[in-house]
Length: 169
Image (cartoon, rainbow, N blue to C red; front, side):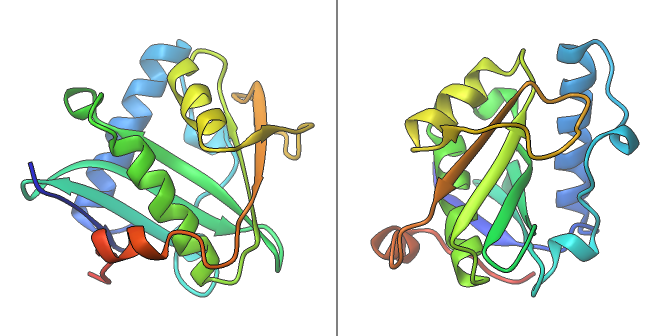
């Protein structure tokens, strides 16, 4: 099934749908989730030059998403990364993560951080397999139990970027 990753505004209907599906899953798996209690991921934070938001499509249907926002001049934070249940097991999470790393590098970030909740064991496995290492808590997200960081290699992902289109929509 052909896939592509597109850069979209957080207000785009496909982005809004994916983020809502992500929140629904968090509510289910965490026994509740209130976005306002979590760390921010506002539309301004997810737009260049501060950040980017990506949606993955499979056969033209949105199946995943993720964003990166600015923490400081060198550091970005991954937010709202999600793959729909029906689309899991096909490497989409890894591809979204790689696209987010490229987007962060394009924005001048040399390091990425992220947090995740304890029940999201699949996410932890993905991040660790992709080279993210545990770090002390860098935020006060009440839903987070694990925090990770990764240094981005300069020039990383050039071959992959030819395969995955990141378009402004």
